[in-house]
Length: 371
Image (cartoon, rainbow, N blue to C red; front, side):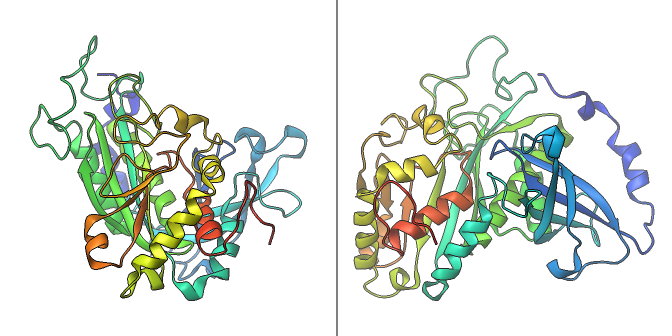
């Protein structure tokens, strides 16, 4: 099994240093999304005291020419602290700081989708939009081979792995448990986890989160997963179809509701929203993966519990539909719906913004309105 060299370093030796007192100083790890729209970067600075809110954190900068975000001749980019979490690796009082990226002229970087998402969320805050996102991922060795798979073949066909238990069914549970606890410590609103259909594939769920918090919490949960995998010497992949052939892909199913949908008779509002989504399918497909739909085309084939990327469909309890209304929602006539189209490597800011634009701001056509 190809693990990274850092996994063989003695964690016991490291721990004796981590146990040293740090005085009054605080380590703040600044985290941001790079120019790919899916990669994460981080670096740390020392603060003189523990920050109690975002306002206590200084803005910072970095070299954008090394993160696909700027040219070398004008490479300074600015980090604007946007959300703060406890640091489960260095522990209290140290912090993780999720940042927005601004260019030299103060405008948002191309992959900073948070600015517009926040603006759109503020326009509909009286409707209290809630989201829950189901993040699927695959654990790989550093050679790109799925964790625990035979080195020159395939495991048995799909069937026994989903929510499976046992060494021959659950591959890499240690990573899942470590990540879950790290999220709880950090203050991420993680609400569950399970083994997925393909062996070495897992899922965690984040939510319910209101408005901009959905994107903030999912990005930090992803960062924590990458960081946990680093300690174990393996890689977390959010590729929507990591293994070609008769294996399930990886999505990020997004559950959505408003105050009206959650109240008695809310099914009418759910059905109205789905009707609007049906008229704007191509816009959503473009918003649901970082390559404008190209990544998702490998996954949304109409097979392996997906809908076809070229067709919009909706149904109660139908996992082969674009939009699924859970059976209990159909029975209780209120609740939420699940958009099954977003890819595992989607930007949650882009996904949640698109849902608000279409379902609540009543936008139509292939382009987003300018606000």
